[in-house]
Image (cartoon, rainbow, N blue to C red; front, side):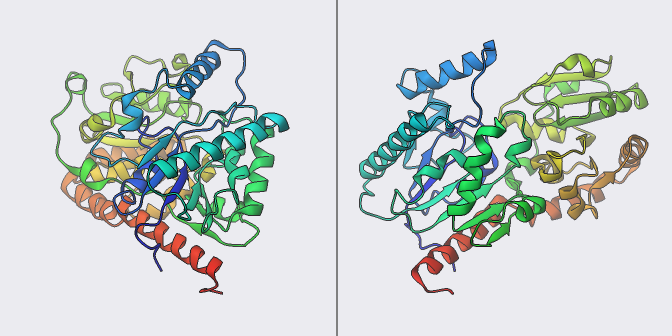
Length: 397
């Protein structure tokens, strides 16, 4: 059964509107029928003494006191509806210090209850959905109908996480939530809650956004073809050795990387490798449609075996061929996507894609994407939530 329309939902996610992430994609389709109170990121890493960490901590502290709350963080962009409230929690990122964490829990509880009251939702029991282990202290404090952990990654493997701090919090979260929803099958096996109910809900795609034809951006039009492109965060997950091998195999073409850069690009240096940096989500389709082949050149390691890459279905929706390394989550689409287990097979798959029938490629990819939209994923999440609420009420055994 689906969650009753109008049920309040408290969501612990990333910063609303700052990035168009999985959980924000899903809630785009939920917000019109459910009043959502969104809690911005509450920190998964203890800040170090480096300049980057200090800048990030400074931005968070300013945001806590309203000094630098950007309009974009409250707007979502790309035609997205907004939550009824966005909470910028006044928390400190040292969740492993008991006295700090006790303060954080009280501060979050007060801010959420105030947001519910100001939104006309006081006294109404919410559903709680969290993608953030440090929220565990709030479970049971909001009178929630049910609680769900929306697990998007194996946090213990992420470089942006302090595992010794987050690990115990995630363990406690798995002990307390009613169910877990996972974007990868390996997560559904490893993140089983005490209830035993772990659901597999893979990534979706904003089909209409990615498929609508766009003019070729000028910075792509000036590059030699073929354009072999990657759209996503450029960091240690990307196999620099593989990318350089691709550049050597296609010396007269262009290897283009679109997305935030979080690694030393010296490892990617080659005359035909172009690291263009991030582009707004609104212009992403134009870039992806301008690729002759879309690639997912990820290393295979403990982190990526739990990754269902967003860009795979985005490439398909844009109508371009896709070549990926042997990621477990990519294999479910192997009838449409080329899966390569070695550098040689990856390069051969790119060459095959360049020789392929573009019309047939577009048709097959877009057919796949149409059957895996974010609307589909949102409806599935609401069914899971409805079942969990019914179990709490004794309607389902």
